[in-house]
Length: 83
Ligand code: FES
Image (tube, rainbow, N blue to C red; front, side, top):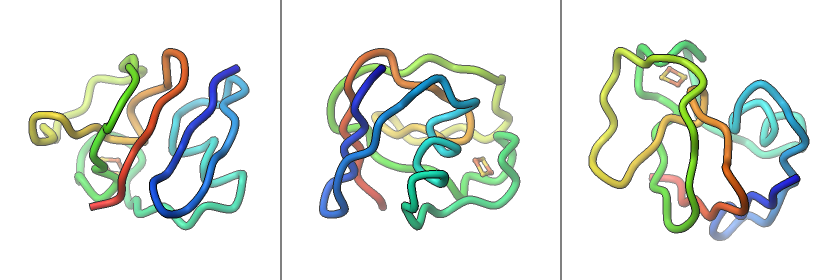
């Protein structure tokens, strides 16, 4: 289990959901997304601290220091910030 902190919005727990996006979505966070498949970049956020692991191979390349919430899971506690 890992804690996900969304700067300015609060915290959520990651309990083995498919993706970081799914965990936040299920816990009532209003996260941006569109394709959920790593293609569009709509779910791009800044990774402030912690590490994530890819769960699918995205076509869209996020900026350095950014992640696609639809395409990763947290490895331990993470802090993210919406763009
Ligand atoms: S929702 Fe499209 S890349 Fe994540």
